[in-house]
Length: 253
Ligand SMILES: Nc1ncnc2c1ncn2[C@@H]1O[C@H](COP(=O)(O)OP(=O)(O)OP(=O)(O)O)[C@@H](O)[C@H]1O
Ligand SMILES: [Mg+2]
Image (cartoon, rainbow, N blue to C red):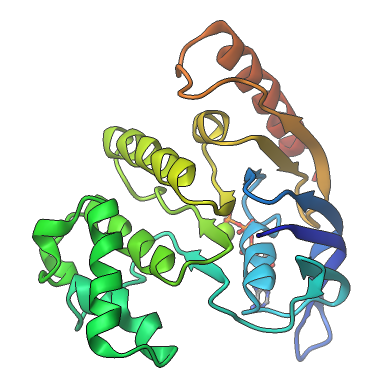
């Protein structure tokens, strides 16, 4: 189960010279168990900060975030994270990257390899399990990063623009694959993107944030059956609506 509740979260970064940046201000929203939520907002509005707080890698200044009713105080394999790029250990093969978290949990080598192989197969990298990251394309590296996160069997998967560095075609393929995985595995997704198209294709709801300090501007329901066409009138209408919300933020700084 992976129910996330974000209540009145604020984050102020203070510098030694006493100046400060208010990254997030009174952010509140809930993400249901097994829900797919995308976070969208202008650059610098605190999306990465919020994800890192949920991951337990960053602290909050005030407010509270709970997973299944329990406050988050630090990292936990129940909350996996996938970054934009370069998150694999370059000195480890694909399988050794995927087993890393399992080894950290003290699972024995043979068992963790067996477990890792299952997830490597799920993301379509079976033939490359003994390859090093430099031998893989960008899309394949992100597949490996997804397998690594999934191998810990997280309740929540936090993804920070995981397809941001990929070309449009690879990106579309990985979006479809991610949806297939999401349908097979019961995982809650919180997915940061700059792409309105990506958010509309993937999510149950889109959380649109304001310019910094990041607040919730609007939460848009995407009540359309999957798989979604990328060009249907309903999708176009939603895309227009979200684009308008983002455009407003360009001028409200
Ligand atoms: N460790 C830190 N120390 C000081 N300021 C920080 C730190 N991390 C983030 N910030 C500031 O907080 C604000 C939000 O940053 P964040 O990276 O969360 O934005 P973002 O929405 O992810 O932006 P982008 O879309 O460009 O990735 C920025 O003004 C940034 O400078
Ligand atoms: Mg960011």
